[in-house]
Structures are given as C-alpha cells and as structure tokens.
Amino acid sequence: NIEQESFDTIGEYQLGDVVNRFSSGSLVKPSTDSPYSQVSTMIYATINGAIGVLASLQKTEFIFFEKLQNSILRHIEHVGGFNHKEWRSVRGNPAKNFIDGDVVESFLDLGRENLDEIAKDMNLSV
Image (cartoon, rainbow, N blue to C red; front, side, top):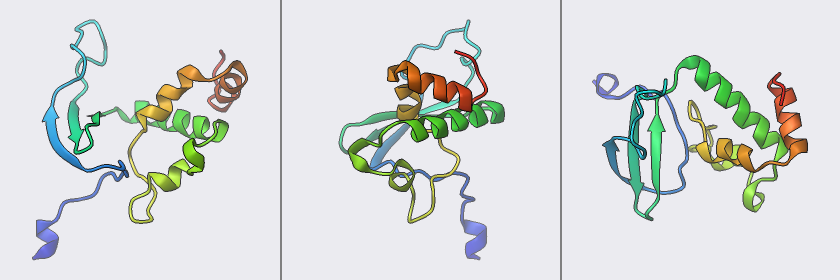
C-alpha cells in the first residue's frame, strides 16, 4: 500500500540548490551556558558549495521568529526584485514550517526606522 510507505510532510522550503549531504552537528562549538545548547541541529551541504543548518525550535520560538521574519519581509526590499514568499515556495505551495535565517539575520543590518516599525509589529520596544 503506497500510503503506508510514504512520509508525512511536516515542512517545505525551496532552498534554490540541491542538497547532497546531511550530517548531524553544529557550525559552532556548543556552550553549556546557553539555553540553546540542547537544540537539535543538522548541517547540510549543497552541490554549489553552500553550507546551512536545520534546527528544531520550540513552538513558541518558531512563532516568534516567523512573526519577525514576516515583519522584516514587509519592511525590506526583496533581493533582485523577487518576492521572497514566491521564491521559497515549493511547486506553487508556500514554504511551510521553516524560518529563513538569512531574513532574520538581516534584522541586524536594518536602519532605525525599519527597526522601530518591526518592533511595533512585534509589540516590542527598542
């Protein structure tokens, strides 16, 4: 029976490259002082030489970062004119259950006006 042999899809995300290697591990040495030292991570490598990390987040953390990612995407120009949500979609379906770390990291490079707008979206003070 085909249904018994298939996996459940819990997430989809267009990486824009072909992954040719997965390995459990981290890109940084784990710190016992960090609350994130127990986060399960997987490193991947692509045929074009990119290296990335997949990490499991608690539901509350995922909700926070998803809200942050969506707010950032509303306040920045899309790279190359591409709509980020369309670019990350898989076979016409929006990305699901993934946070784009590059988008979240771009928060660090934003100007004060954008930071204030994002903080307002997130109900946070800066």
